[in-house]
Length: 423
Image (cartoon, rainbow, N blue to C red; front, side, top):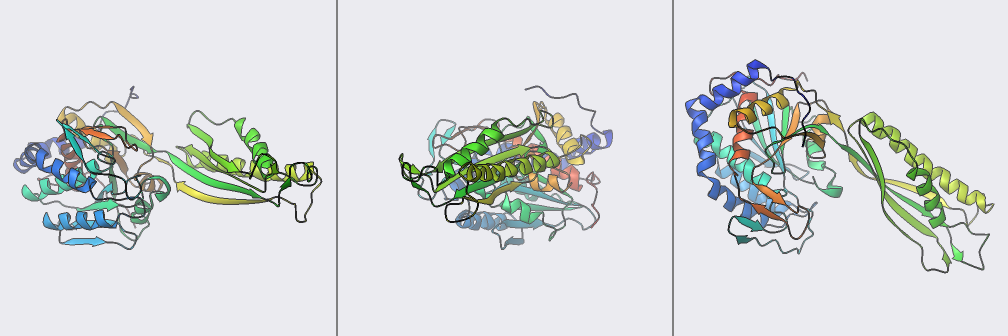
């Protein structure tokens, strides 16, 4: 994958990362990640085998909280929304950085999540997405604790709820809602350590329903508008929409259902619509056009049959079912720059500098310095029952995020490179 030509990383940041890596405690921490790959993998397996469907992450959350406490955090809470939040305090004169890995999986309760091993391959739904993130979160904590590294700023170790699907990154949104001060955020997700997210792809999702009385396809023809026809009218309009290629903006009617039988004028029809962009303004403009198209389509279907009020009139209902805000970070963002410097320090090539939809959407949309970094290993077939994880270079993710976090909050004699935000 091609990477855009980027400005050089600020020399102060490059030197800070190098100094952490060269320090006695920094070297020890990096070695711990290498020494503990088998231990960390066992934790990844253990957590995978605890069911955690979106909206039902409680059991996995309880175990994660237990492990965070066991590895040295005294201030660990499960907050009202269900996030596990553990604070590792610094000396009190630095920034606050959150490291967040989502706990939920896309698989419903009752799914067989028992992990099967074939050599260095581990096979189970959710083994990669995102139990590898939780494995990395715990490993980073042990690196700081075992190496005895003090930091200037605080680090929050967070397991978030509701990152997947209709969970709508609710855990990350709540973490960033202003109740806690945050100066930076790193989401831990996916496995490709060559990837850095520079932006958040926002998505707005709506369920659109059209309802009327309906009737017999022959007897009520001409007197009864069709909910299905109204949806089709809207679809025809939306299919011809032109949207920007830059910033990339997309739309799709993802699902459609309704009607009763082949010989019934439909009394109900509904669709789910997905709209995405890396630019919030473009996303909002597209959303307004889509919703207007459905309003017009219902009015046109009623007018086609001369319906203006009364029992046969079609009614429109719109329900938002997803709202992931968009956001872009400049190349000068200290979190992006520090992550690039950490990659270089570890000999990792930057192969992907892109936008995606992760827990980092919430902080990015608020202008908080943030990104999403990966865990090492190779994850394949995410969100499927055939998902598997290859245990290859799994130490690189913890090393990458450790170096990034340590330089951002200040450690091993290095001053923080992450500024403290106002407010």
